[in-house]
Image (cartoon, rainbow, N blue to C red; front, top):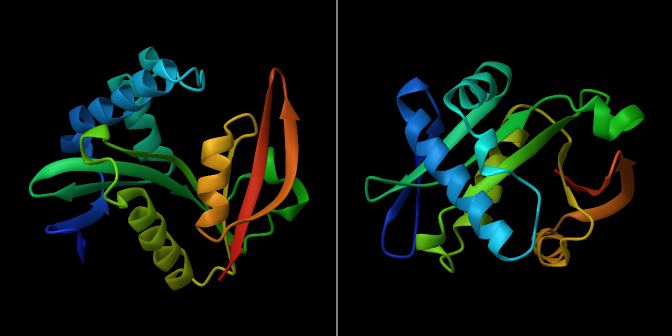
Length: 170
């Protein structure tokens, strides 16, 4: 785990393991419910089973953040994302997905600090770009990523969805 200062508390970020599964489920279910309450139908809380979380840990680098002994956020990183990024995916980027912060700590810049930590991790891995995507209709999240220094590149479309691609040159 590495630490970074929080508003009055330390933020510890490290690789998630099987012992973190229940906490990760809580974070994702809380996020899914909050999004639905705001009319953002991105995630179904039933998705976040123990098996789903185990699959994320097996397939990607999954991280969990603690503050004061409480799980406060999580995200996954992957080193390739051809389905969304196509020809741009040349092995020179890290891709962030599934970033969540508990609503109990809303307003403390935890999301920004998780992005900053992930950026440093990707930079230390020798990558040139930090990339992520978000649903194009989520104007608040799109503005959040632009304000965090990410540059909009394009919108990709799938079956019933549209995602905006963002990157930051490291």
